[in-house]
Structures are given as C-alpha cells and as structure tokens.
Image 1 (cartoon, rainbow, N blue to C red):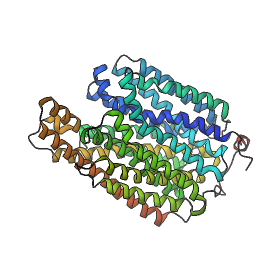
Image 2 (tube, helix red, strand yellow):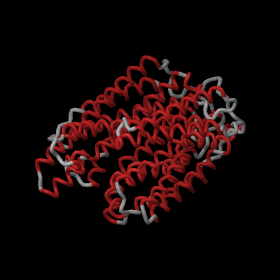
Image 3 (tube, rainbow, N blue to C red):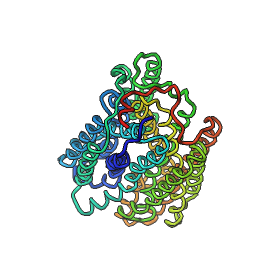
Image 4 (cartoon, rainbow, N blue to C red):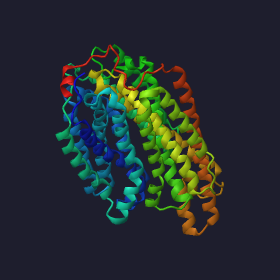
Length: 507
C-alpha cells in the first residue's frame, strides 16, 4: 500500500458537509407537511409522494451509481450527484405547486443515490487501514447529525421564512461541499471495471421500485390490497431474477458472491438493522414528543439530540476500542445496547416525563453508534479495491431499502395498535392519526378524546419499540454465533482482493 493521501482529513470534512445536507433532507420534511398542505393546497396523497418520491428513486439507483463511479471516476460522478442534488433543491424551493415539488424530490433522490455510495467508496482509497475506523465514524456521524437536526432546522426555518427555505438551505451547503470535494479529494477509479450490466440494472431498478412502492402504499391501502400485494410480489420476483442473473453474468452489476463471506454478510445485517432502528425511532418519536408531551416543532428537534450525542459517544468508543477488541465484539455490544435502550423505551407510559425518554434515547444512540460504525468498517475491509463503488452501493441499497421496509412495517404496527386502542365511537379523523385526534380535540374542546389518543399512541409506540428490541437482541445473538472471529479493525483486505493501479495512484 502506498502512502496515505496527505489531505485525507480535509477531504473527509468535504464529504461530511455534503452528507450533512442529505441527512437534513431525510427528516426536515417531517415538520413541514402541514405547511406544505396549506401553502400548496396538497392533499394527503400528494404529501405522501412529496416524502416518498425521494426514497423510491434513491433505493432504485444506488447500484448502477456505484458501478458508474468505479468505471468513470468516483470523484467526478460524486460532483455530478452533488450538482444534481443542489439544482433539484433549488427547483423544489421555486416550485409553485405540489407536482413541482414531487418532481424536484425525484431528482434530489437521483443526486443522493449517486452521492451516498461514492462518498463511502472513496474512503478506502485515501485512508490507510489503521485510520479507517475513525474515518467511517466521521462519515457515519455526518449523515446521522443531519437526521435529528433536520426537524430542528426545519422548524426554525418555517417559523422565520417561507416553506421553500427547507429546500433552499441545501444549495449553499452543496455548493461549498462540492467546491471542497473538487479541491481536496483525489480521483479514483477502476480502469478494469466492467461495462454497465443493463439487464441487471433493469432488474434491480424494477425490483426495488416495485418493492419500495408496495411498502409505501401498504400503510395507506392495507397490506392485503391487490395493488400492494402485486407490487411486493413483482418486486421479490424481479429481485430474485436479478440475483440469479448476477451470479451468471460475465460482467455483473454487483458481485453477489460477496455474501459468501460471513464477515461481510453479518456486518451488512447489523448495519441494516442499525439504520432501520434509527429511521424507525425518528419516525415514531416526534409525534410522541409533540402530541403526547406537548412540545413545539423546534423543541421536539432539541429533544432528539440525546440520541445523536449517544451515537457520537459510540463512535468515539469504537475508535478507541476497535484495534484491541475487533469489530465483531463491538458490534455485538452495540446490538445489546440497542436492545436495552429500545426495551426500556417500550416501557414508556403516557405520564412519563422527558427525562425518561432522554435516558433510553442516549443508551439507544450509543448502541447505534457501536453497531453501525464497526459494521460498516468491517464491510469496507472486506470489499475488493476494484469493487469499492459497486460494493458500497450494494450495502447502501440494502440499508436504505431495509430502512424503508422497517418504517412501513413499524408504521403499520403502530397504526393498528393505535386504532384498536382508540374508543370505537371516535371520529374517523381521530382514529386515523394522533395528529388528527389532537386537532379535532382542540377544535371541539374534547379533553377526553385527546387523553385517549395520547394513551393509544403510546401503546402503539411501545409495540413498535418492543419489536425493534427483540430484533436487535436476535441479531446480536446471530452475529455472535455465526460471524467469524475477527482480527483488529486494521486487518488488511482479503488476499484474493485485486487492487487497481489507479487505486495506488490515488494515495
């Protein structure tokens, strides 16, 4: 291995700034939907697609984006992705209707699908193995920082500016991040990267689009709806054929044989679960903090910070301990900490104060940090250098699709428990959501209805957190049992992993 790239930490800072914008965008809309509904005259269906159009395109394009980065240059394509994301954000801010915002969100998803895997795949080309854990921690924290700060920033912007500011805020961040990437990062590519596997690309994009579409529609239409079932079945069928084709193709879109490596496979499982849990908690908790505990939008964002601080603490601990304990032990400890935090959170009652939530959120954040960071470090360590882009795209595809599937499943569980716990004679608007119940109760002055809705929502949230706790405990046991005994995080890549001359030139 050549000398480490001298400006690697500055370059990582540039990547972090770009990822921060992506993190904001994943959650900033959570506090803006009511405003968008009023300002753009958007109905429930249009609001749903303003949120989900981004996820749909994002999940579908991750795999092709990783291959194109390997082939044409990761830095070059990363800059293209940032430019597209920034331009689409500007278009969203200037849109004069819901349709325009949906189209802008689609193109923002395209840009994010390019940026996410390529920002990760650049890391092994500029950092030596002994610094990779710390680099992955910073990379992960950059995205994680934006998630809880998104609602906080969105609330502040909506209180002081017009609705388009939640999109416009991305533009200066992307411009600054793009200039920094252009100046500070070296180019890296694999000159032997295969041509685009068009059949594999069509199968993967079609399968992921159908699968995510079915998951998006399920909480609204119902899991037994014929359209939902058709989309889910079609998605599974297309993805099964994608795997079969990739195993036979001479120049595959992604090397599915990576999953024969148990270290790689179980690290992906752990990282995907960590992503699912973080996304799920950020989905269910804001409504608890707002409706049940009565906090405003900005105050809700502030109260999510303990999870972020815990995540950062987990990252620091990983950096200090990975060399001595190895990634497996830290990942398993993180999964157990996640299970503990979620299990305590599942005991929440409607009368508990914020202090109780702050404690279990902190424990949960530590667990997520101890899980995702060493898991992704293990993944990067097992990727052959000539497959950095494709391998990173595969991992991010699984994580993001798993997160979307988890949110839909948890959302359906929460909604079902909530509806069952509400009085049978409550109005449809109150039974549909806790927000609807709160609005109706305030309008008619019905304190009993609001109390029932708060209690029902806490029951649903407890059920969702309990399921996540069981999943974290199960994955912890499976990883400990089946993942091979690790070396320290500075272990080199597998000996059979080829490296390209251009990778060495990038150092």
